Amino acid sequence: MRHQRIPDETVRRLPVYLRGALHLSGRGLESTSSQELANLIGVEPWQIRKDFSYFGGFGTRGVGYNLDNLIRHVSRILRLDATQNAVLVGVGNLGSALLAFPGFRMYGFEIAAAFDIDKRKIGRRKSGVLIEDAAALNRLSARGIRLGIVAVPEAASQGVVDTLAEAGVKGILNFSPRCVTVPRGVKVITIDIAMDLARLPYYIPAGRAIRQCV
Amino acid sequence: MRHQRIPDETVRRLPVYLRGALHLSGRGLESTSSQELANLIGVEPWQIRKDFSYFGGFGTRGVGYNLDNLIRHVSRILRLDATQNAVLVGVGNLGSALLAFPGFRMYGFEIAAAFDIDKRKIGRRKSGVLIEDAAALNRLSARGIRLGIVAVPEAASQGVVDTLAEAGVKGILNFSPRCVTVPRGVKVITIDIAMDLARLPYYIPAGRAIRQCV
DNA sequence: GTTTGTGAATAGTTTCACAGCA
DNA sequence: TGCTGTGAAACTATTCACAAAC
Image: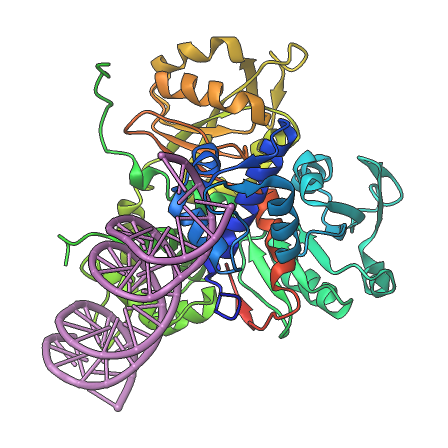
């Protein structure tokens, strides 16, 4: 049913399905089933079928899903069917790791520009990307980059986000643990590493571990 | 109502509230209201009150929340009231950034050990932490570390997770985009950076929110 | 026979509105 | 009066069971 609201949770899972499909396709498979894909990525088969059904379904009953077809459809929905250029702001420890991070390419992402305020870094290259002066960020708009990755200290994040938004960036992946305000039409996704670690102890039973009897 | 099931979403938000409370306390404030805290972190006041109500509520009607009291309660619930030692496995680009990452300390985390398989790194120090031989990971159990951070290449993650679980680690923050299997009693939280970026383009044409934190 | 696609049932979460207390 | 705490209502998401299609 194409004319239905898509649950946010479904959108969150689509990249997982895409990765699984790419993985199976890379192993030489031509097609898969909701059961096989579910086993691979650790969800339930009906969840996959339900999620796909919001977009009309990509499979063939009694047969399964053709992988090329599946990959094409999901990529299109996520708008990952063409290379997406991104700009990185903040080439510190985390930013440098992101420049070297191999995982972006699989989805068609390319870090096309990097900015920092540290004069010692400006003009150098990291992982093949030239580090430019963050003071020149406002001239970014000419390059038509619509995605930004923000890896600056907490205190600087709001300013960077403002500048990116003015430069035409429409989507921001924010690694700063600060709630940022953006204009309408700009979407922010925050990754807060410390916060994810912080809820881990909650789930761990208190006290010393009992010896495991297997 | 102390004897009620706590929603996962509530647990996910508790570290956000804790950070907000620590921030206000650091600014010298003695107390706050659900309204003030909500404005700071970008949620609605009733969400905060509802979440706190699952634990009986920490406030005073007509007055608000005493910050010390709030911080003490939330820290206790999350088991962050004593220093939590963690072990890092994989001191590559991302692992090194995590060693240098200042955000863990606020919640009382301490990276107490680091392991890698690269002979050139073993024996050296990064951000003050000695890098040990990953082959010796099985001797970790003597140190009583219950939290692990896994920042190894995708193909190695399951093996590392297995070894950590055998060594008594009960909670794992996993940066590998691979579904891992763990024994009962071990909790895994996965941070998949590329996947969070991958759902950003979906929202770009129709984006609308003004204040966003997640 | 097999596997998808989907309405209906169930479960979980957010939002509301106001009672309860300082 | 002001702000918290909370049951009830509204909303959202997951799970089920089976009809439909190959």
